[in-house]
Length: 263
Image (cartoon, rainbow, N blue to C red; front, side, top):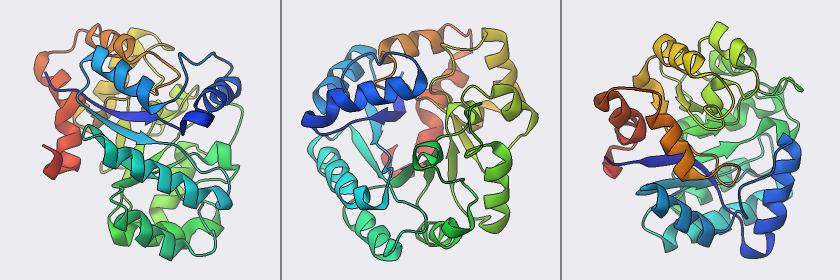
């Protein structure tokens, strides 16, 4: 069965260990390993993952250019990688940077509102998201954190009311550490979800309830490397007891519907 991982982070070698520790510190859990390209390739191969969306989020406007340059280079060097760039909503020159993202061959964006300390629906970012929507780039949003109010389902809904044609993937079943809030606030049917950083943390029956409520056709498998070991994330998802057709859709079919040219 083909598997695509839509949620993995990589950094330049000189930053890979520090970045993994910083991510772990933010979430209060130790990362599995350094977030290097070499480590990701090894771990994805061990897990039987044949394709991987790589990303990391620019935290400030001045990081955006270098983040996108690195991700494009990494994606171009490894045929199994699909690169998602990043943007800081409302930054100066966002139109030009979005054009550069596309010219670099990056296929979407990853945005982490909690790291940026900028709410998803902040007025300063609306024109940026309209420009993203015009270009047809999907946005993978970090969603949820019970410590903050930057990335709630309600804020994403408010953004989508203003930019209804924005293509969105809501990470972490729509709300990391805020899964009840996600369950109680379903997002529009054109919004997809990813499975990252969820199955290790909530009961199996709640995962199944969320899959049933939102529909398995809306889910994409994600490991959240380097936080977790990809092979264990695959094993945990297989352990949910889903039928083979549903597993196949979540592991690869729904991604291929999003990117038909990658099928």
